[in-house]
Length: 191
Image (tube, rainbow, N blue to C red; front, side, top):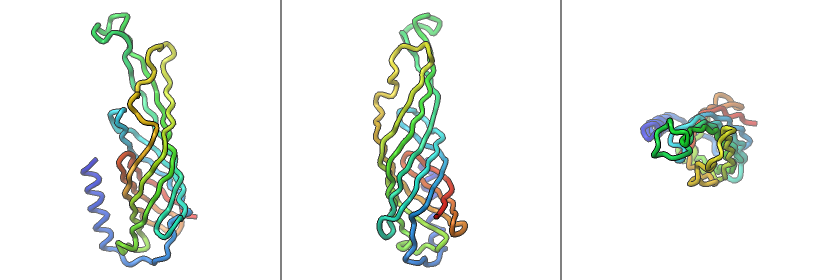
């Protein structure tokens, strides 16, 4: 993941040097961003496919806020019984559960287009997302053990981002958002 982020940052810096000056009165808000990608959640132990959606609105020059919502789901297994006895022992059972999580919050983005002298086809930003995660875990019907398998996870959500958008035309663009938790590629629709 670190190699991917470093390679992407180098690619973005090369694109910036090839761009021409951008107008200073560009508005970034009134934009619906729909993306899909991968995310890493420490208590899960591996990357998961995720989707995100947010709607940006202008707050100040080069700064937007965007209410966001995301989602991911995965299935995992939990062992209940005496772990010192072999699997064939009737007191040791494997049960499956499915977790669905929906992060909800607010993303603040600052656009560096003027600083980087980016062309009108490109936007570059740094951002932070803050919110909380709604989780729902569904167990197999005959499981009666400890159902709190992610005891160390926090309901709060914090993510730092760097990203870029390439404007296909005035109404649509493609974006790449790299972050500390969820990285996405998607479509931006400008209203």
